[in-house]
Length: 311
Image (cartoon, rainbow, N blue to C red; front, top):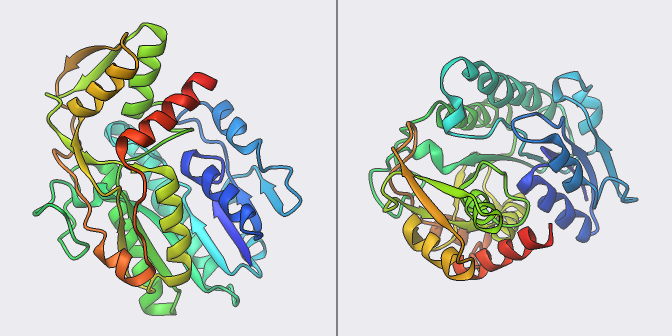
C-alpha cells in the first residue's frame, strides 16, 4: 500500500503518518511547516518518522510540488493540510484560509484525478461546517450552516471534493472531525492551553460561560476512523468522526483541576464563530466501516497530561 499524507507534521497528521508506517505501508509525508503555530513543534512531530525507511518526507509547499508525479502510484491520499483555527479566520487573514483551504485543495484534487491507482481520496473536514446544528446529535444530512470563515472554507472544500467525485469519478470521502485532542495538540486549543496554564502557574482564559458543550474526540480514535474510511468509506459521502460523548467545558476543567490543582480560570466573552454545542451521530461511519470511538474524555485527558509533563 502506498499512501500520501498532506499536513503530515501537524497534530493529527503526525499520528496518522506513524500509524500508516506501523501498518507496513509506504508513505509520502508532505508538510510546509506553516507558521499558524510554531514550526518547531511540527519539526518535533516529524522526528519520529521523517527518517523512516518507508517514508519519503517532503518539507515543501503543495503549490510548489509537481503533484501528479508525487501522487503517481498512490493508493490513498489523505489530505489534512489546511489553515486551522476558527477565531483567527476573520478579517484580512481570510486570504490565507482561502489560499490554503480552497486553492491548495483544488490543485490537489486536479492532480489526484490523474492518479490511476487511487482507491480513496480522504479529505479531512470539520464539525465547524454545521455551525449551530439544527439537532443534536448531528447527522450528516443536516444543512451546513457554518458560523465562521474557517467553517465556510471547510464546507466549500467538501463541495469541491464532491464535484470532483461527481464529474471525474474521484473516490473522495469527507470526514468531519469533532474537537480532536490528545498528545501533540495545537497550542491554541483549549485542552493544551488549560494544561499548560496549570503546569506553569498561568491563568487559563475560558471564552463564554463554560456551559458550551463539545463532542471531544481523542486523536487515536480520529486516526482509527480515518484509516477505516480509506478502506470502507463510500465515495461521495461525508462522515462524522466524533468521540461518543458530549461534555461541557466546565466539566472538563473540573477534571483538569482535580489532577492539576494550580489551574486558575479567567472568563472572557464568547468569541465570534464558536458554535454553542456539538455532538456527533457516528452511526453512518459505524455502519459503513465499523468506526466506534474507544477513548472516553477522562482517559484521553490523562494521556494528554502525561505528554505535557514529559515535555
